[in-house]
Length: 458
Image (cartoon, rainbow, N blue to C red):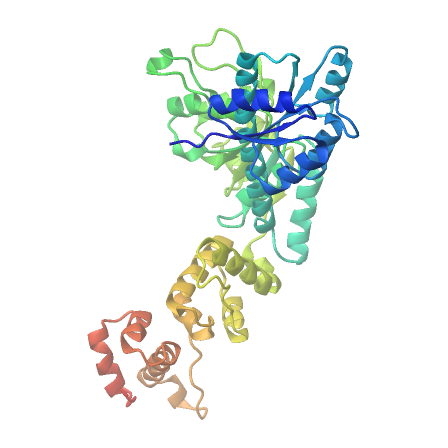
């Protein structure tokens, strides 16, 4: 059963408080009463209140003071003012300062019930809006480009510059370099930052489906069983992000070009077009300039998208930033899937191992490797041996006396094999089953390698 909202009545007249309370209790609301502003503020701080009904004119402190006190305290609550004869101008002032509505005396019980019901619904919207803002603030705190290298500083600077405008942005770079994150940052730092952020994967649709997805349609148009709101309309007042734009076929390129030239939206089945208020960001991991030369991407569309190009650097260019990036990703992982609620530590020698790797999958690959490492580590520090096994990095060949022996394949392979087995056992604290999993072998076969290399099974 849904719990009814609570209403606070603030009025200096006992009869008014009691009569309003009787009406509201009959409607199922919980009721608190206060004879003045100070008592009302105290109740707001101590109780859960969804709607306030306050007399506008009261001795000492009036309803405007209550309104300002609630606003100063950051309490998201609709306040309905009760006004008498000759106070209509004051009621208008209260509305300008944020009052939800006003009622004139004598208060009609049916009107009171309707206004309080709407105000309670409005309170729910205010709470949801605050929760959404808090979620966005948390996202902003964790979704950032981490590092101080010159390549990253250059990308950050370009993002800050273009965010202040409404220009079309083309984000390019290898897969996993953070292009979608960069698009989000452009959006959040712009005047559209509180508006919608709508991402469309251009590679996921066939021509007809893409047009319906992007522009929408009326019921019955092109065989549509129901009306469909397109992604452009969903992004109204915000940002439309076209991911993998280089994958669009020729027909779709032409359709997108027409939209970018006119910025007019006309869903299938609609008789007229209207102006769309969206900012466009395109993302590609292809070299669109080369695609234009090869004839697979339209030059005019490329020019429309390439108003402000922002190339995203590869992780291989950010080796100096690896410690900061790793710590940031581990912190995010701890927030999403806490391992005891603590962000795991990476040892110094492990960071050296990570720096030796080329990271063809860039930051996305690093994030995946760190996630696998945390699962295998089971709460322990992430060390070099763990990452060497995950990344399949070559181990250094044991050095002996110079001469023909150092080139003997079997001898050196056996030495590397022994070193791998030893590292796996050390890393798993001699737990043979876990060590075998790390080594990628059947646990039943580990005994063979222990005997072969004269390693203790204890």
